[in-house]
Image 1: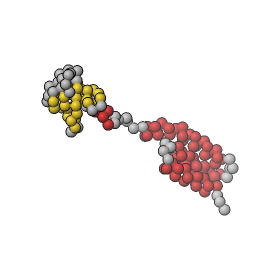
Image 2: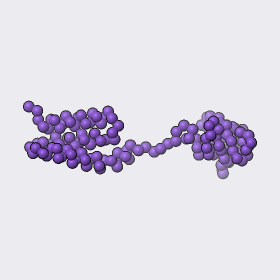
Image 3: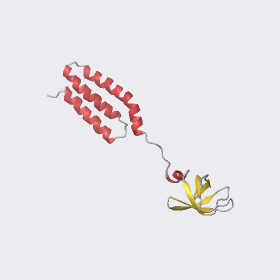
Image 4: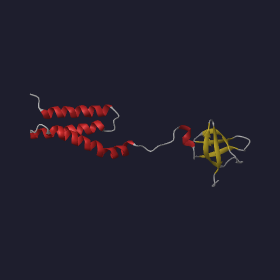
Length: 143
């Protein structure tokens, strides 16, 4: 004979397996926990109780776990690729003039650099923008 508590336990396992296999931000995990609560409530032998416990507990878990899930899932944004160079310091290898590109070195790589002001070699500059294969730089206050 098949027991109601076993059916709810199987549903809980199914919900947890679905949660593991899908990026649902804990939605199916909440349903799995609700199914566990419903499984326990079958021992009171009230026909409508497991469904009520499942619906109410799952709903409350989804609502109240949302802020926690958002905090856990949300990662700090980081710039990718060349955008990560913006606001970094670079070392000038070759003098930069408004009319002539120079060369700078950042993180072991050499880049063409341009500026609206004249910048001598062997000083540090701040990267303001990335334009294709060139960096737009400016003098830093603490040369």
